[in-house]
Length: 113
Image (cartoon, rainbow, N blue to C red; front, side, top):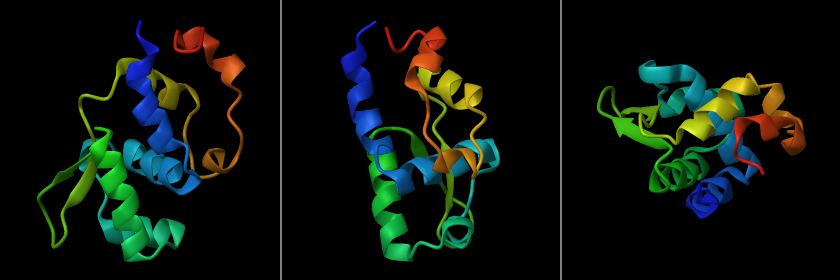
C-alpha cells in the first residue's frame, strides 16, 4: 500500500478543530450536519468553520449536499477504507476527540506498519 496517498488527509486531520469537526460529520453518516449544528457543538465562528470545511472537502473527506439554507455536510462515500476503519475503531465521540490516539494500538488496521 502506498502510504503517501494518506498524507494530505492526515495533514487535514492534524488540526484539532478539523479533526473534531470531521468526527462529528463522520458520525452523522448520510444524514449529515448543518453548519449551524457544528457551530453549536464546538463554539466556532462561521468563518473559522468555513475554512475548516473547505480543507476537509479539498482532501475528499467531506462533501456538501444541497438542502437547507447552507447545505448539509456529509462524509464522502469514497473515504479510504482504512480511514473509515480507523474512525470506527476509536469510536469517535466528542470526548474521545479531545484525547490522544495511540497510533501503535491501531497498527492492526494495516495503516501504520
